[in-house]
Image (cartoon, rainbow, N blue to C red; front, side):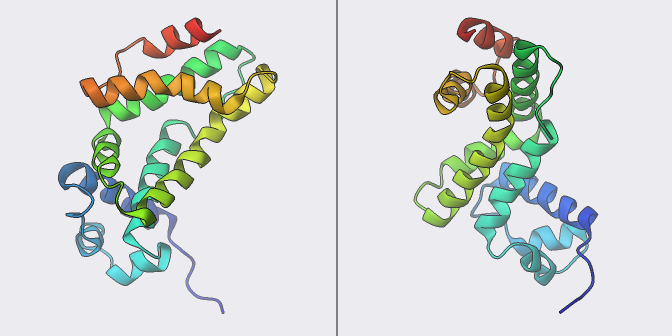
Length: 176
């Protein structure tokens, strides 16, 4: 069955608006109807792309993270590549709706469907770091190394509201 192709620009607008609404008002207050109206489309158009509000929220987070780091850099400088990826992620947490949306979504741990969707999004985005680590540090446990690279930043972000500038370089230099 063929139909009209999915409009990638509309999908991007839906994801961006969803993230903004979650950041501004929280997951439960974000209504798919409000997203659709803000994007000049219908609720059905949103649900053709994502089966549930949980999937939409997780995809919005993934989309924002992909904007920060579309792919793993390969400059030939292992540390510089790690620092670039981490800096981009930390800046997106600090300076875009992504940070507040993540905080709002972390408060929703009682929703198992949302938790599963967010875990899948997190695993997909960790691939950027995995690629760099597999190429330049193949003997290291990539999952543990990623946890170490991100863990302190998450703590600072959640506790202080942002990750300090220069943190990526400090953590990479500390680990390597």
